[in-house]
Image 1 (cartoon, rainbow, N blue to C red):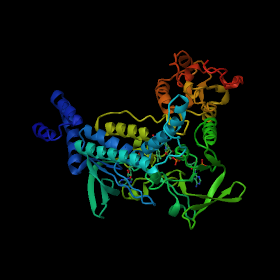
Image 2: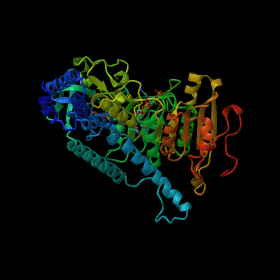
Image 3: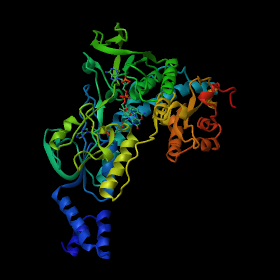
Image 4: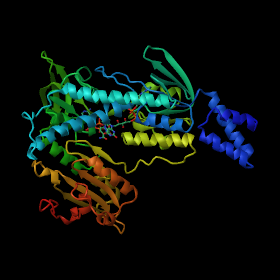
Length: 535
Ligand code: FAD
Ligand code: NAP
């Protein structure tokens, strides 16, 4: 292709940085023929398919990748489709986090914290008109406020995609072959598109246990935030992030909440921290049934649910609840994609995709977000990986996603934030003799006047026991844990050491400063509880 003809094709893609920078190369240097060859092959691929990139799944990871790719000049389409939950809940564009995850969860957590704050305010001298109730008196108002916010985010997301010229297709996508995706639309019509590259970003959906009545009468996180009636007395099955967070805000809103724990609380987290979180929740009124598994859910004549469960000794128990919420983990939505048509391999054990550097076993097909095997199921992880992938595919970048030292927070009533390893993992990885654990209980200033329970406010720092004293884990239980831990995660990325942490001047009076004051080692056996209110 002559270079003038090539230039006229390039003007169709004004943002196409790769192509323009390659064009200036062509003009500038003697490697003209090689560059021409690269460009011609690029264009022949682009024109061979309708899109440079098709993304299946318009959630955190998929949308981030799509928006980044389009900024880099690629022609992009996104398929997003929500299959209603077994109870009929459905929602709009944006994926789990926006619709049935982080956002509604944080808003309901905040509603619960506000209830607490109303009670505390009186101690600070506020006159609260009427008697503050211990139960939210209007579930509908809360639910509607949350749902209205979500709808506004759905709308903004659609407008953003339109403005950026990303083609949004509201169809349930599956592979026809490794360059062709078919979307089944709401009315059953099929839309077929072809693409040079495809990103799988379909996330997951809550699992149900295989017991009688679970599917018929149980709900999950897909339903709780849009429930058309107050949940009432609720049994939450599962003691991971979702179980603890949902039980925490339901209890805070005044509903009777019970968590059924199969084995341990917050598997994968530092277990001392996890048990402190559970103890705090118990003191606030959340009930725990340990070492138990549900066996059946039956609806009674009055509409309430009789739940049968078995304990570790094999003994059966039962109780009546208004709502049973399953929070037993999530299942990747890969089978519906018919990955075999494209040759994409999924793991039998969990239906996830093993994709080193987000590359599947098929050279033009990639994957990001919750669908990835052994990657944290967190929104910022999906977003960051999606952006970096798009930059590598369309922007000449070589930067890879770093999945290590990702900070996270459990939004339990008293929050728990952490980054890096838990104590058990650090011991397994480095050996007990090679680490030092610094810890302290502390007393947040604002807890004194309302006489809030501070017995679970605790920080822990895990450092290597060598010359560097590099910090490999930081853990915090207290107010605003997410805000506290975020900055420290940047410090850990910069290879924070214990001497540097110790030489950092704190901000007083805050809870975060406790990290700069911690000096008692676990190995010393010294008492980590503070001797006075504000020493
Ligand atoms: P998703 O956001 O799930 O997006 C996938 C999209 O693809 C969905 O819209 C889905 O309907 C669609 N889809 C699936 N199959 C197809 C198909 N075949 N064709 C077309 N579309 C399809 N993370 C945090 O970081 N912080 C939190 O506080 C937090 N809280 C959470 C609370 C709850 C209750 C839950 C459930 C999750 C929470 N998460 C949180 C996790 C977070 O929501 C996920 O990690 C994140 O949404 C994953 O993004 P994703 O892009 O991989 O998938
Ligand atoms: P999870 O963290 O994997 O926890 C699942 C819980 O259910 C575990 O306690 C598990 O017990 C239990 N369980 C599993 N199968 C069971 C069964 N058949 N019967 C009874 N109990 C069973 O899953 P999740 O809480 O559903 O959360 C999913 C993901 O969403 C998380 O991995 C997280 O990344 C993400 N998320 C993040 C946030 C946040 O960032 N704040 C909040 C919510 C969700 P065992 O320990 O015995 O296996």
